[in-house]
Length: 417
Figure 1 (cartoon, one colour):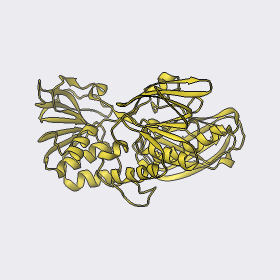
Figure 2 (cartoon, rainbow, N blue to C red):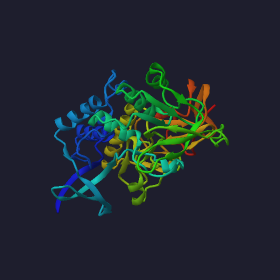
Figure 3 (cartoon, rainbow, N blue to C red):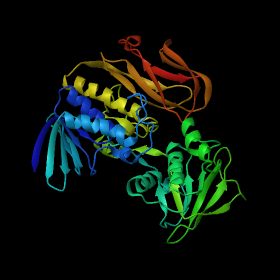
Figure 4 (cartoon, rainbow, N blue to C red):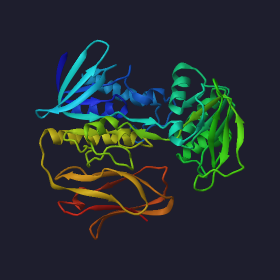
C-alpha cells in the first residue's frame, strides 16, 4: 500500500472540488485531489449550454469552459490529482485523517490534517416520488440524458415525456428539441415552472415546447420498453384528481425531480445532517461537526448557480487555513435558526472568533413580493435587506458584516416577511 502525506485531501473533482484545491494550493498548502471518475470537471463536462460563470468571470461560459478554467489552474499549480481513485474508508487516528483509496494501479493511504468533501449531489429517482409501473428500458434521469446527448450523440427516443419543471428539465427539453426530438411534453405538479425565469423563456417558451402544469405521472406502461405513461391531474396539494387519468404514448420518460446531496459517507463518519438540506450541518466556513472535515458545493445543498457553489469552496479553503493554523473559536457556537418563511439555509452556526463577513444562502418557503430579509440577534435586528421578489425555486444569498455580531451570545434568527 502506497502512503501519501498531505496537508489537505479534497474528495471530488467537480467545480467546487477544483476551486477548493486551487485556493488551498494558492494559500501554500500541499493538497491532493481525489476523483473517482475518469476526468475532472464533474457534471459540468456534459453541460454544453452556456450561462455558467456570469458572476465569477463576468461572461457566460459553457460547462466545459467553466470547469476548464479551474482544471488549468490546478494543473498549473502542480497539485497532485488522482483519477479513477475511489475512497473506500476514512477514519480519525492520532490527530490525522486516514483515507484509504483504490485505483486501477494501486491501493493508496492518504494521511492528512484536513479533508474537503466535494462529492456533489445525486438525482432523485422515480421510486422516490412513488411512480408506479414496471421497470422497462427507456426510463432516464435528466443527467443521464444530458450525458447521452451531449457526450455520445445518442437520443433517448423519438417521443419523450419529461417529468419536472425545474431548470435541468427545461434545459434537457431544449437540448432534445434542438437535436430533432419534436414530440416532447413536460409535466410537473406545480402551477408554473419552478426554475429560473430565463430558462422558462429561453428553453420552453421560445421553442413552443408543450407543457402541462398540475400534472404528474401515476404509472409507467411497458414491459421491456416504455410504451407510455398514465398522467393524472393534481390539486393544489398535489393529490391526484379522480377521473383525470390519461394514457400518454411515448417511448422514453425522463425524470428531473430534484437533487439530493451525496452526504451518506459523511453521515457514516458521524457528521450531523440537516433534515432540511439533507446535507451536513456546517459552520460559517462550511466545516462539518467533524473536526477538520469541510463540505462544499452541492454537497451542502443544490445550488442554482455554479458560481455560488464555487464561492463555498473559496470560503471553506479559508476555513481550512484557520483550522490548520489553530486559530481560536468561540467558547460556544452562535446558532443560526430559521424564522418565518424560511425553508432551508446554510450555514447553521458561527464558530470562529475572527474572520470574514458571514455569507448565508437560503430558500424561502413561499413566494413574496417586496420581501424583507432580516437577521435578528436576540431582540436586535443586526441586518436587513429587501428583494423585489423571492420564491422557493431561487436560492438567495446575503452577506452579514462580521462586526454586527462581534462576540455576542444568543442565536441569530433568519426571517422573511
